[in-house]
Amino acid sequence: MEDGPGWIRQAEADGRLVVSAGGAWTVAGAAALEQAVAALAPGPAGQVRFDLSALERVDTAGVFLLRAAARRYEETGADVALEGIAAQMRPLFELVAGNEGREPPEAPRSNPLTAVVERLGRSTVAGVRELTALVGFVGEVTLTAARISWRPRRFRIVSLTNQIERAGLNAIPIILLMTFLIGIVIAYQGAVQLRRLGFEILTIDMLAITMLRELGVLLTAIMIAGRSGSAFTAEIGTMKVNEEIAAMQALGLDPVEILVLPRIIALVIALPILTVFADVIGLLGGAAMAVVSMDMNTTQFMVRLGEAATLPHFIVGLVKAPAFAVIIGVVGCYEGLRVSGGADSVGVMTTRAVVLSIFLVIVADAVFSIMFAAMGV
Amino acid sequence: MAGEAVIRIRGLRNQFGRQVVHDGLDLDVLRGEVLGVVGGSGSGKSVLMLTILGLNRPSAGAVELLGVDVLRGDAEARAAAQTRCGVLFQDGALFSSLTVTENVQAPMREHLRLPAPLMDELAALKIAMVGLPPDAGPKYPGELSGGMRKRAGLARALSLDPEVVFLDEPTAGLDPIGAAGFDELIRDLQRSLGLTVVMVTHDLDSLAAICDRIAVLVDKKVRVGTMADHMRDRHPWIQEYFHGPRARAAFAAADMASGEGS
Image 1 (cartoon, rainbow over the protein chains, first blue to last red):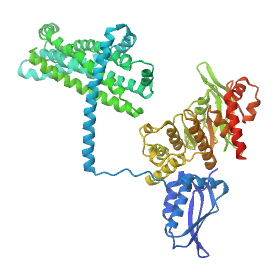
Image 2: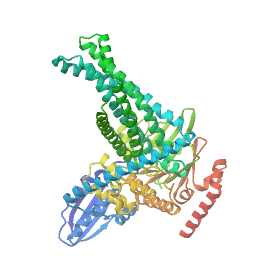
Image 3: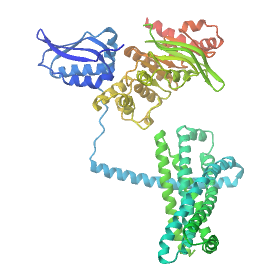
Image 4: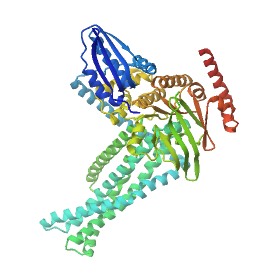
């Protein structure tokens, strides 16, 4: 059944104003009806009769607009009567009359300048609090790890292997592809620049040192932060939303022991292994590029590489891997446990975990560089 | 009550792998009635609701919603029929990144072009209609209690003034006072707005208090009747359901309430 569109008009009869409305007054036509109501011209004060007997269909939006129309006449001091409402529409009019006009309380307006200062203060305090809480969390994890090492049988070995598979084994293809490409890029860029100085052969030294000391481990850590750190936050955060964490605690199970520790240890094991893969494939990518673009055969390259890629460089890179793994694991799990509320909080915390862990990994890398420089390695 | 069927299901068959949930199920929902849907766990109550809404494709059968063939009708007609339906999911299923007001306005924004002040006023009206305080509007779902989330979900379901409203376990998880209040709210709104209500519920108090007819899902089919019809049914599951100790208490309470009313 199709009803005609809603209409409203006013006419004068016996010195009285009669406003009649009819058709369908529903939310579907609400925009046009609101304009029609706004176009009414409330006359001088007196008696106004609303004739609603031609209404075919109304819903809450329609009733709301009809009552808004009536209010416009009332504001001019007129005495308004709504008449001709069909019996089956009466409950709807009563329902709307009982519930309308309850505006939500206005949010307190603040000075934009003080608001900026307030936001700055709030975010500073929140940042400091987050950092201290993170330190507290590191302490908690350390204590749990110490407790576990007293009773190693409590350790969740199945969970650990599962996590190593997901964070380590499954990450191998992408790590290999990425570092191979980076190896190519470094070798090519280095060769182009060093050729102008006549030291093209030093490309191999540059490749070996950057790859082994810095890029192999750093790129792997960044990839794992994006891949596994975010997964940790999302998994643990979703469990928090589903009250699974609370259920664990209620059953006397320690979430740090069951969820956090296996994940961190899995990364500590997986990241160095991935770094070794990354180093080897990175050098391989560089070698491929060098052989193709430089006038050098494979044997020459290998001899030079053997001289440049010394064990200390390799060790310096590898030593950093467990430290980066701890940073990624701790931050990922910590942000996951901080999830509160609903799905949007999981998203916010996951973003924050990735950004924070990559940032902290780079900070740690800088600290390592300074340390190694001081030690003279 | 007009005899017009707003939902007409014929020969419905739902099968997941080898598990047959519905087989040869027929059901009519009449305009203006409150139909309660009950059944044991796994009897396909939620699947039935999703099928009517066109969110689940059945293996066989025909489903007609407000005169539109949900399975074979053209997409535009189906979408139009869907906007004439409102759904209250269990626990509200509110969009957690939007405030209550924005949740209520979400269907309006999607389907209609209304000026913002009018949408604000309509949302405030809907929020008041479901019995929420005005200051609930700017809050996020995470800040509300379970009962308030259900009311907010109902306000969103009523956003476009639907003709048919589906409620999935509306009183589950509410305390008895809250549940009775929610029943009353549904009954009042159903009468004032002329709604047709399909309600999946296990709350015997709700069944006794507000349902005109009850559809019982047994043996992959549905048996529809009034409470009195089901009381006489010899089917063992129905016997146990409507004659158990909890059922007796609920019906005694309903009888007392109607006795006082008359």
